[in-house]
Image (cartoon, rainbow, N blue to C red; front, side, top):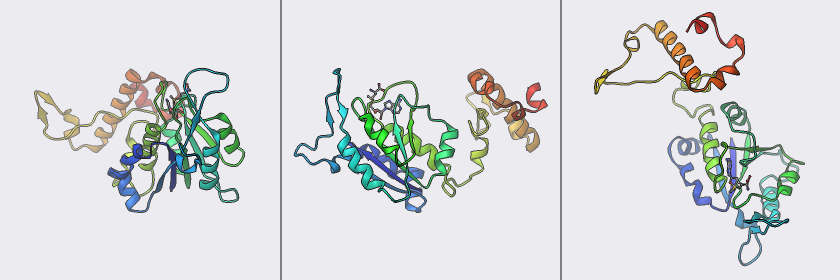
Length: 242
Ligand code: SAM
């Protein structure tokens, strides 16, 4: 997968050199480049913002540098990337969206700052590439960079070859609409708290059943909204009994 990120704070994206994303890059599974939007400015102050039409507080990102950046990174005539624009006004990012994005060959992120990017940039880009605005949640951040880090963590771990054990993707929270059961490791007893006996029983059938029903109960307690959207076929009789 190819990923391009445009930001006025490229250093904010430095963590993309670390951990499993860094390793995916070194292994060539992810070709990632971070670009400074100011590269596409032409005045001595390298201006990227101006006052909002209609008045009001704050500044808005001017369309010209964004237009030139998108022309260079998504040249007309070449296969278009999917443009992702972090925004608190977009649909909420989900695991389902992460799967959708993991299937794309090329993602291009446009990180807004200030009061956001002039809307015409998004409208114009949409005439020649798919554009998706993405919100991390119902709150407002300073800029889109943190959203890019979050989205790329979620997407990269779904790319083939990135996780040592891809099986862990099948049972984790949100993989099947449920939350995962709690997890434990050694020692078996710690500060008076014991690992549930069943997990030490060696009976893999019962362990799988325990994990399923504990995950279900956890979902019902913590996220009844997730249960409410599960298709009826996702639950069997033993799930209903739990
Ligand atoms: N004026 C905008 C509004 O009220 O919708 C908020 C602008 S915010 C201060 C600046 C930038 O931060 C946005 O353009 C976006 O890139 C990013 N941002 C802020 N909150 C976000 C969120 N919840 N999810 C994704 N990106 C967000």
